[in-house]
Image (cartoon, rainbow, N blue to C red; front, side):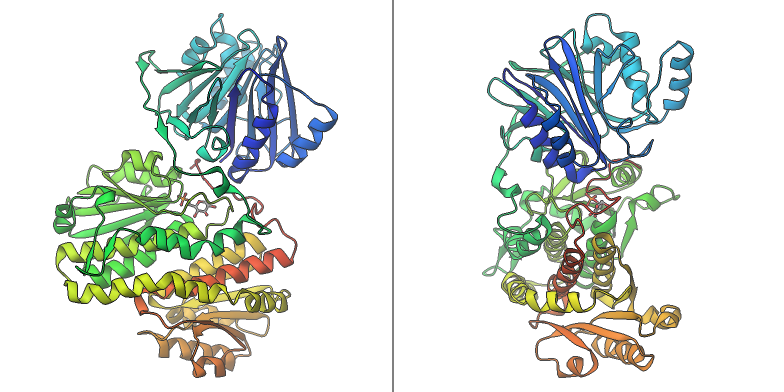
Length: 609
Ligand code: G6P
């Protein structure tokens, strides 16, 4: 939540700050600002609103300079307003700072600083940091930062500048991610690599309790205690054009249509039809860990939690192992116990979700091993884990997760097969048809996506419907939850996901002509029961849409509209059933003219608790 950026170069860096902020906007978008060092002064521009509003403001009030910082905000303390927008400055206006995170002891610090005579002009927790810097500044911004962070409790990624040292930015990390970009004759700092790809693919990652000093000629890192740290430079393989819209109206649409390739990339070189084997060597998980594991616990938030539920059903069926899926925020609040034979998987697109990180840290000493299932192999979660299963989805910019969800399901399918192989719960003869079927999944996904126009037509016809019930059973129950979440997130329509069997225990009371039920009815072990659900809805005057196999005459008879999917093995139907639901939500939101890629109040990466 919140994105920070900084550039130190020997040319005007304002366009780079704005470009970087546009790429970080998915992290928060209620207000934005920049501070630029210009001829011995700090020039600051801030707005309530999005980066395009900041750009408009800069057209009438331009600023330029070779060194500066920027911020895009997701409000925690203090409502979205120009005053609360970062960068914040000290009483003298000679120091400016941007912050991602939460300062937990800000109130005590604020009272103390006020008593000392500091004047506060915002409702934010962040402002205390810049007043502390003012107290500690004695000719070295780096030293002032070192003394300041020693007084802070909470999580922070900060970048700051001083007009007395106009060639440099000092950044510090304790919690939220900080990435350093090493350009030629220029240096960058950012919350995320996507903001750096335009300039350099050479990056390093600040660890917790480290400080970086950036100038145009390079970057120097130390610990909070002042010890020098040598940072390895990694060369990224992501290309800048991977974060363009490529002719689609929205990133979300582009990302939905990229999903078949995501599955292909995930399966690549991890499956062998000849030997009937699955290889997860790239994840660095010792097969012995699988053999020793008596229980698996999956930990995640949001859409990643839904992928975890799909993973549970796969692991139960293939690996014959007890599996629990836990919301990270709940697990960390509980007195959770596990024996040493428990394998823990953290599932997180970003690898930076604060609750997921905290939950994994809380259980890691009890676990046999912790594996990170992530799209960000350099993230905090990946670095802290014993093994890393890459979901190979490429950068996802739309705030509502789509292709990373499918990437997680692909990774978890492979994981379940590898687990079952190691445990010998299924032999190569049984694995081979599953491998074949998985390899056919991307093409089948393309068949579903080719019918997007039909889904758009239905979504437009149902625009006036205000309430939805998404129903699924067994492995499609998580897809019902995910379909409802997508519709809520981007079209602001009330939607609930339910297990089909639970309908009669409550939601059935809501059924009338104002409630549309979207039922997932692939022909699988719970097919007949799902048809029963549909009949119960119809008998009470509810409207029904269904996702069903192409040749399913029964489903066509009972539903008002059917979104057809090709026949598929029952374990892999979620790869297909989720697509019409994503498209339905997308087209509903787009038809309403909503901001599909940046829905209100949400952020892609939730680095606060
Ligand atoms: C936010 C995002 C969701 C995401 C969730 C977990 O709420 O808007 O799309 O599923 O965080 O994020 P993670 O990066 O841990 O998968």
